[in-house]
Image (cartoon, rainbow, N blue to C red; front, top):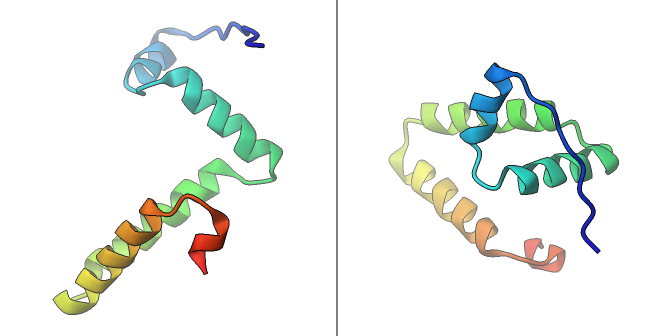
Length: 83
Protein backbone atom coordinates (compact mmCIF):
# COMPACT_ATOMS: atom_id res chain seq x y z
CA UNK A 1 0.00 0.00 0.00
CA UNK A 2 1.37 3.42 -0.95
CA UNK A 3 1.41 5.97 1.80
CA UNK A 4 2.04 9.63 1.14
CA UNK A 5 4.33 11.90 3.11
CA UNK A 6 4.47 15.57 2.22
CA UNK A 7 7.87 17.27 2.11
CA UNK A 8 8.06 21.04 2.46
CA UNK A 9 10.69 22.74 0.32
CA UNK A 10 11.78 26.34 0.06
CA UNK A 11 12.43 28.02 -3.30
CA UNK A 12 16.06 26.93 -3.46
CA UNK A 13 15.41 23.28 -2.60
CA UNK A 14 12.40 23.24 -4.94
CA UNK A 15 14.67 24.20 -7.83
CA UNK A 16 17.03 21.40 -6.83
CA UNK A 17 14.21 18.87 -6.56
CA UNK A 18 12.95 19.80 -10.02
CA UNK A 19 16.34 18.79 -11.45
CA UNK A 20 16.04 15.25 -10.07
CA UNK A 21 14.08 12.84 -12.25
CA UNK A 22 11.67 10.82 -10.08
CA UNK A 23 12.28 12.88 -6.96
CA UNK A 24 10.10 10.56 -4.85
CA UNK A 25 12.20 7.58 -5.90
CA UNK A 26 15.35 9.50 -5.06
CA UNK A 27 14.03 10.29 -1.58
CA UNK A 28 13.14 6.61 -1.06
CA UNK A 29 16.65 5.52 -2.12
CA UNK A 30 18.27 8.04 0.24
CA UNK A 31 16.10 6.81 3.13
CA UNK A 32 16.99 3.19 2.39
CA UNK A 33 20.71 4.04 2.28
CA UNK A 34 20.39 5.82 5.62
CA UNK A 35 18.50 2.89 7.13
CA UNK A 36 21.29 0.54 6.04
CA UNK A 37 23.90 2.74 7.73
CA UNK A 38 25.27 4.23 4.53
CA UNK A 39 26.19 7.90 4.52
CA UNK A 40 24.99 9.13 1.11
CA UNK A 41 27.22 12.21 1.26
CA UNK A 42 30.32 10.11 1.91
CA UNK A 43 29.26 7.68 -0.81
CA UNK A 44 29.03 10.61 -3.25
CA UNK A 45 32.41 11.99 -2.16
CA UNK A 46 33.99 8.57 -2.64
CA UNK A 47 32.47 8.30 -6.11
CA UNK A 48 33.75 11.74 -7.10
CA UNK A 49 37.23 10.96 -5.75
CA UNK A 50 37.29 7.62 -7.57
CA UNK A 51 36.20 9.25 -10.85
CA UNK A 52 38.89 11.93 -10.49
CA UNK A 53 41.54 9.25 -9.89
CA UNK A 54 40.45 7.32 -12.98
CA UNK A 55 40.43 10.49 -15.07
CA UNK A 56 44.00 11.25 -13.95
CA UNK A 57 45.16 7.83 -15.15
CA UNK A 58 47.36 8.52 -18.17
CA UNK A 59 47.37 5.01 -19.60
CA UNK A 60 44.41 4.88 -21.98
CA UNK A 61 44.40 1.09 -21.93
CA UNK A 62 44.02 1.07 -18.14
CA UNK A 63 41.24 3.66 -18.34
CA UNK A 64 39.45 1.57 -20.99
CA UNK A 65 39.65 -1.55 -18.79
CA UNK A 66 38.28 0.37 -15.80
CA UNK A 67 35.45 1.79 -17.90
CA UNK A 68 34.59 -1.67 -19.27
CA UNK A 69 34.52 -3.13 -15.74
CA UNK A 70 32.24 -0.32 -14.51
CA UNK A 71 29.84 -0.97 -17.39
CA UNK A 72 29.89 -4.68 -16.57
CA UNK A 73 29.10 -3.96 -12.91
CA UNK A 74 26.25 -1.64 -13.86
CA UNK A 75 24.66 -4.48 -15.82
CA UNK A 76 24.74 -6.83 -12.82
CA UNK A 77 21.50 -7.06 -10.91
CA UNK A 78 22.18 -9.58 -8.13
CA UNK A 79 24.83 -9.53 -5.42
CA UNK A 80 26.12 -12.93 -6.50
CA UNK A 81 26.99 -11.54 -9.93
CA UNK A 82 29.59 -9.20 -8.40
CA UNK A 83 31.98 -12.02 -7.51
